[in-house]
Amino acid sequence: MKIIFFGTPEFAVPTLSSLLTHPEFEVVAVVTQPDKRRGRGNQLMPSPVKMAALNHSLPVLQPSRIKKDTETIAQLRAAEADVFVVVAYGQILSQEILDIPNIACVNVHGSILPKYRGAAPIQRCLYEGEKETGITTMLMDAGMDTGAMLLKDFAGITLLDNADSLGDRLSEIGADLLVETLVKFRDGKIEAIPQNEAEATYAPMIKGVDFVLDWSKSAIALHNQVRGFHPDCTTTFRGNSLKVMATAPVGPEYWLQLPPELRVLEREWPVLSQLSGENGAVVKLVKGLGAIVQTGNGLLLLREVQLAGKKVQSGVDFANGTRLAAGEIFGGVEVKG
Image: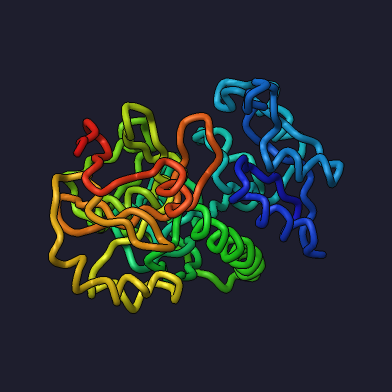
């Protein structure tokens, strides 16, 4: 089976690697997004998929607007591929392109469709506090993740999962599911099932406003925001920007979901449950863990943060290094005793 692979981020690399090691598939070319400038040196950097493709000496196409790129479309036709495989490519394919392969265009999507169609399904399902997600393979059409579904595989979500950890697990699931999908589809062992439009939800692209923490929200809502949009959520601290990269909600309903190193919070609960403060205020510093912050509903532990221009720190190192005190406020003006 001759395949052209479309993909860009690290999430897509395991699927490409799986295809390259399977004896029944021949990846004849890779299509990925153009190189982007990244890092302090602002240097052009290839996508993870491009790097993987070059390591296997595969031809790489990088159109800036694939629907308008007649040269790329001509190259896709000339390849006479059986299947186009698409995994987080980052551009919408026109019907003209979808009609090129001999068999089909198959997409690997990071949710259980029809929930969380769109650009950020992993991030949005965490933000919404889902307990389960997964991977869906589907036949592509001209809509946004609206094609008929082929296979699904499920994955549980833990309280401390973030977009990176969940994305890593789903990328491996997707790699295996795609191979199973192609083999069964070729052999006529899968029936494509149309999506139920009434059950569809959407996962829009993440914007800058999504990163800003509003301490009037509940502890669990803030926790879901931090882990869903990891590692970019921000607040202010002493007039400067502070990234909040990992948190944990505090309360009896969470004890069994926390790892052993955080279970000390259960012993502190008789004291913590009596504390209160303004939204965003530090109500207590727990030895070995760091700051407990008041939210609009409940308490939140800051597990990992990053001051502007500094390295990532654990919550306890941040508290010690800044001499953080109870009563100080994140997202507002410092309260001085």
